[in-house]
Image (cartoon, rainbow, N blue to C red; front, side, top):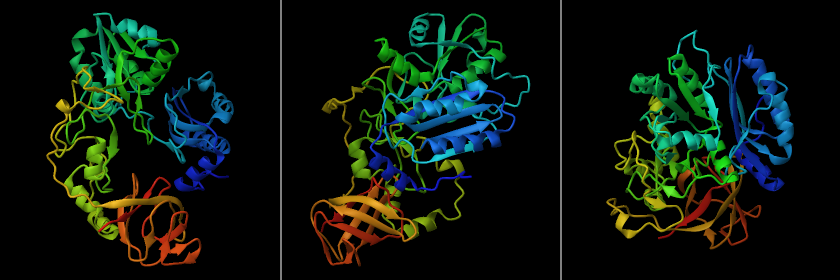
Length: 459
């Protein structure tokens, strides 16, 4: 009975590319009473693994929360695995606006205490006593009502790049923080205001709606299916989008565009930008907004300190991290004193620019950072990594690679790893020179990925 992944992410990506079949990125959730989450988890893993379904799923005694990548041809069979359970009959599957065959590269199903951490310890709180669901058209209409208060129940790094106009956007890093803040802020409006809420796919505001009903709010509403379903409906029904900007998503895309409005700034230079990245330094991994220019200058790093670290030998980087118990501080989302243009909390509804358009010179801040860039030329790309042997294979697409050349292997997860060639095999034979069209294998002290690029450092 297989209850684990037998392929690495790189091997899985290669198989997906080889198959050439469309995959769908989707999400769903359901609150219900699950008596044995462990058995439920095992049954799902076995069924989904047979359908080549990948993704990240949490199950708990209160229900299920899933983000998945499923072959389009297996979608109905996948739905059948859900509808075996009464509480998931006719469940809504939120299909992403933008598709990416590599959105998830492994299957993870974990048992948790709760599918959405809320910090609550109240046996009288009924998570299934929820507010009124609103479809996109109804949601747009209630937003026009002056008696409506709309609240974004996502975190600051999500709402910063996109939100509904006029929404309260709490400056929080977790859902559990937002509940008492909003409860205190709106305590005088329990009787006479429409409390309208939304989140990415609906799961957080579904629990929030039950919580605020429990707190005595009379008129509680929520966006059915969250921003993902809203984007789908406004497109199908040709409705005006009251949401502006990008919707943050929790796969490697980190966002899908709903409107062309760019409402946030590069955290390093202030240029209009809404592209998130993770700091290249594995000991930092900070999530922040970074424009293409800063990405090139700073090499995907959030600071010059992190930039210096990624150029250290990998062994030295590991030494720096050893024994340092940063915990969640390593993965804090978008908050650091080093980010000069970070904004949180009450955000503007005014676009700074439009996606796809050149940024006017008048709004381009001067680059205050000085950095000598390493001169390099692109040679080719990674094709495979042999895990047990620790060997990487590359296809040389242009220029030559020779013994004693200095190279950089670069990628979002790999970072920028620099080393000098002392031995290489070209098309299976040890050689001193590789030319365009050749396949080169190198012994490497680190793992590479299929998206990695191979550069030669120039003098």
